[in-house]
Length: 572
Ligand code: ISL
Image (tube, rainbow, N blue to C red; front, side, top):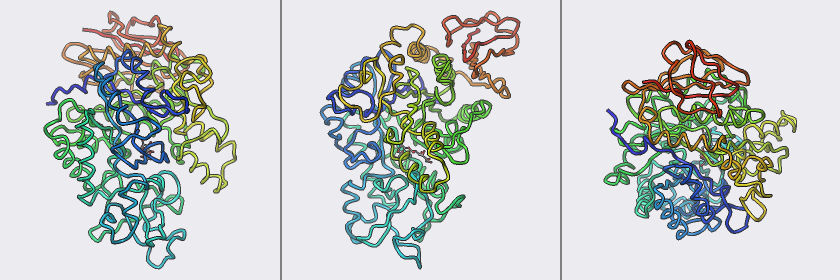
């Protein structure tokens, strides 16, 4: 039923430009830096590079607050530099996908500057302006139009005394939400998107795209949400996967992509999307997106306090969750596969063991993920098995979400300083944002200056130069996985079937296409584990594994795997 699309055979690499490579010694990565490292990407074999935002921005949220969609921030370079990067990637057969942040703009975007200037301004309705709650003193706590929390702590509404009204910001107060109910807003966004496609980019990663349709009543009112621990509650139910989401995406498709669809990649970031949402969003017949990022498998270790309250992962939950997405999108739609991005702690420190089994667990996490059906995404440094930052002091953090959370918690006073630092060390987005570790020189080859955020001291051993020289490194596992995805139809299209769902330590599944079958086995523990795989695999051939010499082949229907070992077997 599904058409054969190029991105079903592709692997995507995310670059976080601020932390990838600095070319001018100011301590912040830039486009010229990426250009210096294009060969690293080409040699890895990835098909697509997704760039986190490099547009003009006050950098309140590291570029996810855009003040000019059609220019590059001077921190990163110029439009000319971007054209050069695009050409360099295209010359090596790679595509470039831009981050598209259109749920909100910067408060310094001219649209918002106009909008806030007066209630009569033609752009007033481009954002969400609302009066204080009836009977409440504007600007006082609890007077916000709704009780929505910002994802970055505190209320999601900011009072603007100039016009005696509040504006909505689901993220920071410097990221006001655009009002997608207004067709002029949508047309302005579509025009900007066409401008980028005309310039030659190959698609978009759409930031929190499933937040664009708010659940608004006919009279313009927005509804309060249930609150667990006052005064503000998770705005998800009133803002995520809203009533007009599919209509907006289908309109975007018609207005922007129609006629130039082939060769593009459209991937949506969709926190809170269920398998059912995912199916609707990625069904090719509906003309919305190619694939979406689910958050379910990266929320399984969240305790009641969310991302800063991490609890140990139960492997059974991870298998069941990814298994549900595999089954749900088997006939309709397509999965995006990922462990890491610039918002997630490093997977080897989170679902793996970044101490005695760093190399093995990073390799096994890679093998297991990449053998699922879907399009794999890897995030810079993942191919090196880079770990969490392991920061020990508040002043090492830069991320606005982490800093706002720390301020809010300090005020609340229920955590000791030690507890707070432990929470940040486990959950902070900065874990993903320390500079790329190129070599063992003082700033890891990232900059000749002072980096904007500390380089991880473990770059003395974990770095690209060392990984390149070691045939058993995580880097070489990734290279082999990417090559395998390109050449093997079973990896691309094979039917997924989960095995041993109740085993707390072993991740096991098959991929089947016609009369060919792959068996994927991963030991997610620090001890030897024996898998009962049944007859028929004793003569199977190892395809790829985490260890130099795989513990296979199987004997009498059993395979014993060493700590964090994984292996893929093929039988025909
Ligand atoms: O809890 C969340 C929403 O339910 C958040 O995790 C949210 O999904 C996530 O923060 C969205 O991330 C994206 O948009 C943010 C930006 O800070 C992130 O870096 C970006 O990836 C606002 O643009």
